[in-house]
Image 1 (cartoon, rainbow, N blue to C red):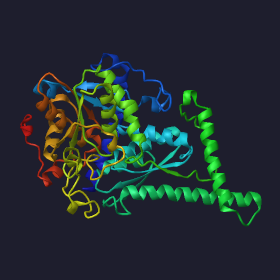
Image 2: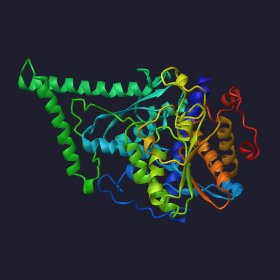
Image 3: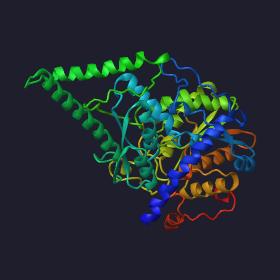
Image 4: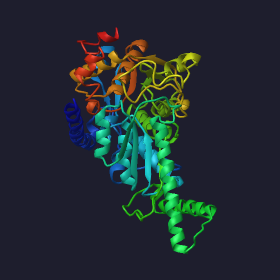
Length: 453
């Protein structure tokens, strides 16, 4: 079993190379693809992004593709934003860029510092890829029930990985809470090193801690000022010349669930791309939520452009967001967070579904919600692979289930957009493992879309 798992992880890592090649080819010929608009990004003022050199420039502007099989079956135009074509392989590349940029601009993160995050996989991979582009390091805490190939990829990218048992968010050892502590520990280490260096430089046996704190704060401010001054049009650009002296640069907790940079990445970036690429003709948008950043940013932007656009949540088993959107109450008093270790129902989907309302999700403007099942997600993933050649992960498959549900409710002639979050390459050991699915009674058997009847 261990050998099979390692092989799956190696296959996922190797396949990522071919995926990147495919991405570059698609972007080179992007103007010839359906639903792809101009490749230029809007200029940034007060945080708006602009093009830049290197890896970061390759993130975003993913094609909006027609999912032929689903469109033909429903009589609607069902379009998928192919976020799996980002360099890091998922929609989370956008979030990683926005979080790191804002942290550098504010001085909360120093060039050479460590970004910490608790993630089920995709955000961690994106941070591990993007952080070095800004001269930073990455430390990830991941639940040990996540697909093993995800942590293998993160480690291969040079990040530090901690795998921990899944527990409630109220538990001090929830993977998110551990990641927060790791950032605090890195900052304490940085302060201790600076204090020691200050003593050595000044020959003093006693140092006023308030003075040291002010010096550390000033150091961060000076670093931030230098970064801002050397940037064109307020851009953050890393020139490979970080001051990697003997001192620790401290840590920064990315906090993807509550950090509003997540929402802003999609409000300022993904949403405008969807609007431009669809030429403003879409009637509905549907997506699942984990942190809530994607559905919040995109829905709010689209609603501002056209209030008639309907936006819907697609929720997996065990998540409380469906009840929150449709009934206003996430769970009963007996189900209150902290009285259970995880979701009340097991789900094989990863990265979506949650039993609390995040700051990011609060920004969503939704007209309703749908609830999906693991079987629907599994069957949809195989249907898309067989009929469209789309090899998508569990969250993408669930989103496509949602797109068909919306199409069935709206009727033929409508245009519906969803997100293809990531590919199946990081889901080989679970979602695309025949034995794993058989053990959970989820072996796919459908020949068409009858599983949605």
